[in-house]
Length: 189
Image 1 (tube, rainbow, N blue to C red):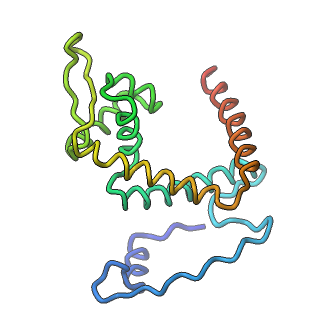
Image 2: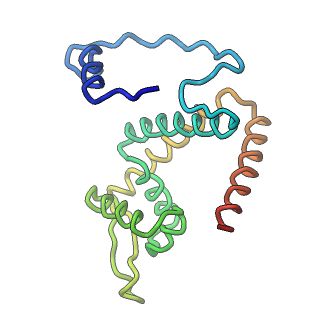
């Protein structure tokens, strides 16, 4: 499938009224009918890799919905994870966040710098070791924590709405096995 050029994207945006344009009302969406079992999802489907394709599709739609819910809460990814971690654990060394987030140091540093500019966190040298930076929430960051947590709870509710409690437990158990097996392979490389 060919990707639309910028010009085509711009043309498409002129054909559809913006939901943010003044005096524009959007018709409410009708509930979507359940998909037929086995029907292909629009998105990445790789022949011979049905599970990987489905995981990728699920991750993408989960991320889109999560981003929307978090934006409404006034926070963005991955800022909300840092806010929630610091809200639960209090001030921590920056290296602890690097470990927790599973990202490289430069990526976490860039994230924290953006969060400092947004007045969500403060970084100060450790009184014990001036080379170590301690990361803490600002009052604004602390104020956003409940909304970020509520957005994650709403995302979880949407994610599991079609599953029984037993199916949810089974899905968590199976995904944990898959994640841990893949993690072991990555760790051995």
